[in-house]
Image (cartoon, helix red, strand yellow):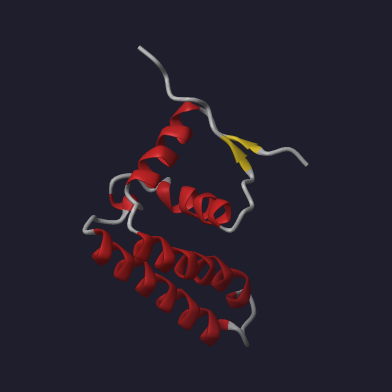
Length: 108
């Protein structure tokens, strides 16, 4: 299976996301928070899993905001909602699963 090609715009969003997530404590928090948030969706798809999903979602976002307190920067999605998706790709890369290909930055 091929990698997801990121066009120049999405590659730039990823570069900005990486710039906003330099602190190792923030990265650690995101590596816990992002999987909890993403995992809450399929868990919540069942009525029985809804209470667990709500907890996963809430705790996941808690980790995200604690991480940004360490970083001293606002979450990336405040300025660009695409960062919500890019964060998942960033997290997969942190776990050693790079599923995308970036376009190199434009040179002047």
